[in-house]
Image 1 (cartoon, one colour):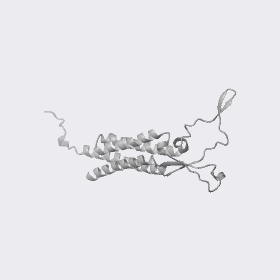
Image 2 (tube, rainbow, N blue to C red; image 1 turned 180 degrees about the vertical axis):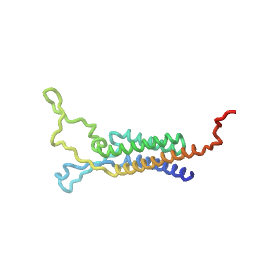
Image 3 (cartoon, rainbow, N blue to C red; image 1 turned 30 degrees about the vertical axis):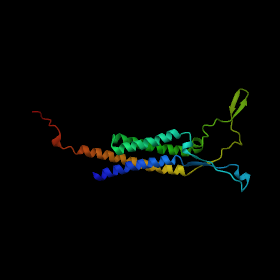
Image 4 (spheres, one colour; image 1 turned 60 degrees about the vertical axis):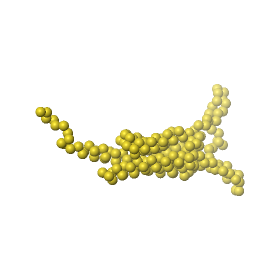
Length: 191
């Protein structure tokens, strides 16, 4: 019983630590853009590769809210406040954060850099504006940076620890119901 309580506290602390790492990783470089025209400029030319963090992306509020909720549910589970509900909610928040990290990484140039928010170029036609993409307007490629991998690893650790947390809460609750002795139950015979 004592080792289960220790494992419960350890898994709750791991979820809380992973959410703290994810919160810090939101502000680290998530994606780096490269320069399309740099080979044409020539060697020795100074140019910068801009990096973008997830906190600059279009989904920053959703990502930050999910990570903060994960931390709050882990704290509630550690403190014993509705432990079964809090651990299940921590698992849902951990899986949601993992899905968000995977989604943001898959569409980094659109969601993090912000290309999805830009309106397409327009050409004035005979019946109004017509969207078009000129052949020379190619977007430079974006490469995932250290922030993505840090977030991904922390989210995977949070999911694994949240699964352990839910399992330990479930085992501890079934252990407490198994300890009811038949003598403590009311007798079905009245009289």
